[in-house]
Length: 332
Image 1 (cartoon, one colour):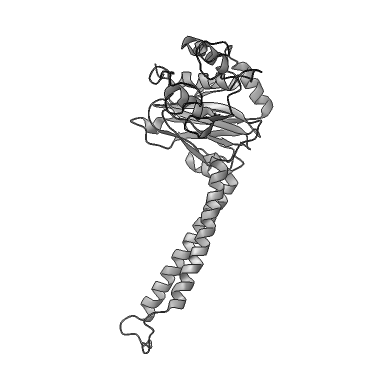
Image 2: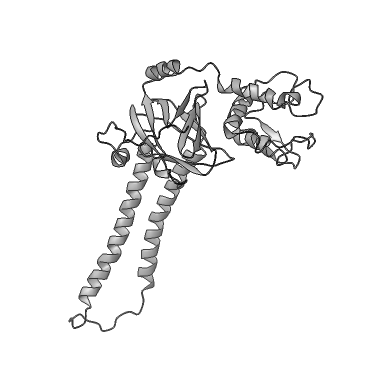
């Protein structure tokens, strides 16, 4: 049975409830920079628009029919005015463009710190399911410690969803069959509304939840009370054996397949001469699309598990492979 959806508004440290206080509150380290960009863009657009309309109103009044304005020897055109107007506005908008590009690059491709806390989030019609590395699971809630860099690995079980926390100024699509990620640092303790910002079906408007930012010591207590006997890596190890992966991807296997010890984060040489880094997306695609990227020196013998393994199970397998340490004498 599908659990009851969270539909109530959540209080924020700024007071009140609902969406607008969330837009006022800045609860992540990146929020202030995004607000600065938005304010600058708004001021620029208002200034340009006001300049255009003020000139239009002035000329409409001055040169209206029947006015005494001098219309003799009027210039048909002025290249100086056109160049100046175009150049000035172009410079301002280019500044905004490079400002926004730098901020986008920082958010989307910037590497989070090494001590980042990874949490896995899956969108599903119509709920958010989160799982912590220790196996703690949540539905329509996400608990995180204040002041800790957080990395979310997002995917979807059915259609495209969009993970949106207004108070953090963060929004990232969760795509079925693929992984997307975002990272942030929550800075203010409190509860913040979580929305799906991509129309995903009949109950899209009810796909809501909350992000709870806790003091570090309170977060540790929460983890302890929700402690699971089975971590994600442990579940992945069980699936690794259940689906027969251990029959090929171990050092003493008779099948010539890549050994996975220490694979995560390392560059992988492919048969076509290109190189890819073995991140979460690479491991995911290697399981469901094994013929897409063949490792150099290995035959095309791995079957596809697409449609046989759920996205939740894939997350556990990825977590297990990430946990494997490099073993001396093996070839990652």
